[in-house]
Image 1 (cartoon, helix red, strand yellow):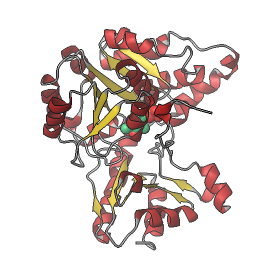
Image 2: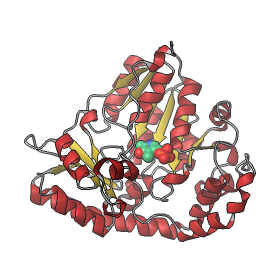
Image 3: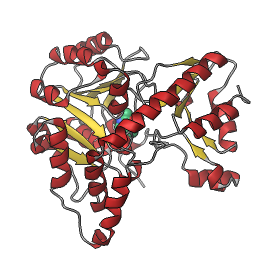
Length: 364
Ligand SMILES: *Cc1c(COP(=O)(O)O)cnc(C)c1O
């Protein structure tokens, strides 16, 4: 059978290995498995969310409120934007899918960092768009601008902090860059880890209201999957000029967010204390990784997220080491598919991190 030609050279996205799979493959007791591979919040989510979702379980038979008014109102208050500036997706992943389909077609060019979130390329390929990448490992806005001038891309992706490297740009750098970009180019600012970045360095904060007031060609992406601890609920959002949002809405399937997920995200926004505690714990535990890397003479990229990227030495093989860890029930992310001899480790609880140090040290 013949399929859409655009799909031929797409490699299926490999999410962090699910715990269930490790149980089956290696026969390890689930309680002995630690997953530090998908940047989930090790503290779980706010207890208020658990309570609120529990209270509406009986509503499962009904379709969700497709206007998503409760969540939109909560987001608009938090960011100081209007509801018409917001679109909610099944994870911000889905918003990425919408925006690429809305703006790019066969032969369109999409500019992104050399190493960045893998889903940008996969969605680009859906529509047969051409991916243009910078050469430098960290976002270099001069290089981005040079390539923008040469290639005239339809879309530019800026991921700050960047996944899977953890580095982040100063907001001022981004605003300066945006001033030089013409209004026909859609610029995406993916802030999936922004809550963590702001806690470490206020200069990294993109004020969404200012961003969309100044630029009508920019969309900001946020998610509830990371600092808010709701990866399993699949809720993310895009914020942009109403004209952009209106186009994205044409691609949105009805009821794309479940009733329980809408409730979870709305209530999560009411408990900023939980997020504060999470980012504080993250910063404390991150220090242990920095110390560990120093002791082991391994390069670590200064991270503004809830994960660390350990750049291994040439005599250490990232695929081999992550496999050995896996056999011990420790799931981390091998970055060899990004052409890096590195592993990405989600900063877990104190206990999970100790377990990681104790195991990995045997394989270095
Ligand atoms: C996790 C992540 C997302 C989105 O995750 P969802 O769970 O789909 O909201 C988007 N961008 C980056 C860079 C991420 O790491």
